[in-house]
Length: 612
Ligand SMILES: [Ca+2]
Ligand SMILES: [Ca+2]
Ligand SMILES: [Ca+2]
Image (tube, rainbow, N blue to C red):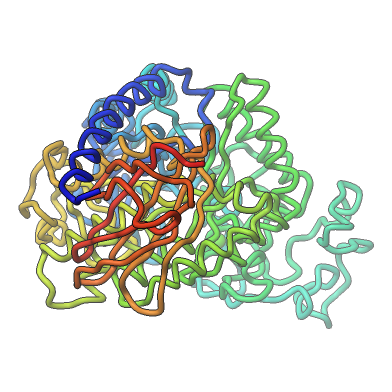
């Protein structure tokens, strides 16, 4: 068949595919959101403080005074800016039009408003410094505001995931031995539970058998009565009853061994920069968190949990906590409750991530290895074989490649930074046009490759940021932070303005990708097969297969800045391809060999009408 005829056929099939896609899209939207599998979602991750201010009356969290009391300073990137849950509810149209079907809210529980040494204070605007685990932070509104948000989201078929923390609370506990917070880690061997202040100290906690899995019983922990084996913990005056529920105020439920070095046993037993690290081996602590977070499922009917700092908690805790949460959710009428843990790494290291699905039995983990692989190949200059190595690792997950379909994937986040920033850092001097193409290519990978795409709020408005953490947490409402105002967003203008522009090219691109993914079961739930990759930037191809009829989708990316044409393997019986994105030849060159032509940093998605 000549090229002209083949293109005409492809156009015709494309039209048919678009009609079918629209029908499928409406079917997905009409179905009960609870029936959708975790793999079906498109997740939008936002920090309530930085998204939209729906109620200026709560900006100071009900307190009055300066920023060191209220935590509120909209001109400082480390303080509260005024965003809240009403603001999120007011922007559901924006979130839904982007194609998101689930919202992951950064923690909404009551935080210590301000902590840190004098002169180095910052605020709990991010939500990870919890004092009251039973109430919405007053800066974000009320429990009723959360209920209204969840109900409104559900009314649109949008799920809501809460971000939970069990590793630590806010920094309240101090140690007598070190008046500043720079307390070095004191190990279990050098400072055993059964001696006061080291191996030569007086005997304490007589008969305590240790914290290992075999001894995590109420009887054993009843013998642990003194928390001063390593340091002498105390609660500063006025903060003795700060935490809720009340059991959290007792230092016996914490490790009290000083700061984590993020290596060795300190990774699970050390304080995360002074944050009070919970004794998650103690069954009282396990039950305490089952009670706390089970109540949030039952009270608000949320649809899943993202678990903060999951890798800093012992495996046995998760082995008990996760099944309890899934059971509470099922009993509350939420059959597909999703739980995914944060196991952070900057490496393409699926073995590390997979170990937490096997040892901890976490149903899923955030796919930091995916983020690292896309960063290396699309922001950096690594060959596309890095992506192949990533997906070969899917076999390691509990449940194998099928389980990997439910891993939330991302290219930007609130800790490491945004993809546009990674591109600018890796390629100083390139223009915004190329940066934009690289961000689009990264998001094309996110939406079409296996895993559940997580969009980090603001990426769709061209936010780049100037680093990680506070430098990647810009305001969607008119900002007053000088460094945010100085930033030049991709395809946008700098300055203090509301950033909910549905015509922004990245918003449009991501919305298109979300529609594509939602319309194709192969992209949501389909098996993925590696086809083409290499040691240098260039072609990367996978096939994905419709779980119902077996039709093949060919997905090809060009990570280089040169055009390419190549043949790639397809199923011998795949033919009558139509273009879901880019230019697709209608027919293979020969059975099992399909021609690919791609411009620089471009991609295509071609769907076979028949695969036998
Ligand atoms: Ca507010
Ligand atoms: Ca502390
Ligand atoms: Ca810990």
